[in-house]
Length: 155
Image (cartoon, rainbow, N blue to C red; front, side, top):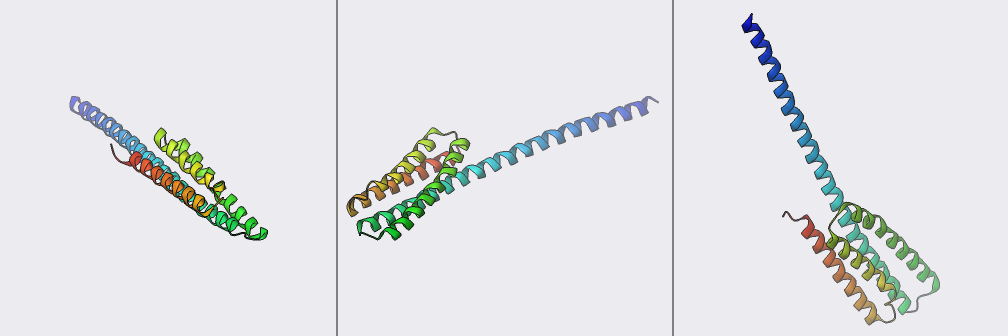
């Protein structure tokens, strides 16, 4: 009888230990999956913002050059509409980045990139000024990408 009681108690204890380990393992797997999903979302925000910044910079360059060469109003309106669309495309990834990435350096360089790109609108007074503004926006873009890359490097 004592042997049977000990066998049952051992079986129950083994089941409890096994269940506890499975529960801990499942929790660890869930945390790992959530961390990986967050990393993917952060990378997506960075790459989407960098790409949108490049697209907007290109659209503003085309718009500025058209204005400098005296393009007709229809062409300028089309280029203006395109630059408004590319500017709108910056908003979502910028907000996502601010919400998902806690690093203030990444926030600051992202904002600098966006502002430097927006400043190209006012620089279309001459080809040289537009070139300088574009180069400043490109350099700000590179600083943003480097700050984001540093954020993602393992410590």
